[in-house]
Image (tube, rainbow, N blue to C red; front, top):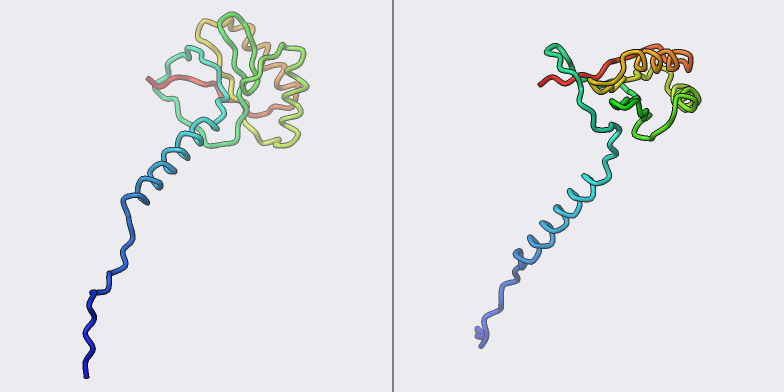
Length: 134
């Protein structure tokens, strides 16, 4: 004998709309927070143009020189007296680092050479000059 049910059993279903909203919110949240966590190592300067400039993937530390001879080591402002010690500390951990000179196009050429000389005394052996390819 066959027994008939009065109610048809409901099929189980997953509400996907609410889950999509939550996942989209998490995606946007992580994109925004990860973008804000990126540390900018450079200071805004007007770089000279060079059509043969190439991007580097080597480990590097950046020395930025503004047009009014302000000096920054990886975004931290300092004077020429402190540069040698701070750079020597960075190079002692990674002696193969490239020191990138990021000088404004209107900065004093003599001051740039002076900073490079201080960097050599601190132990820098590899240099690169930052240029804009545009």
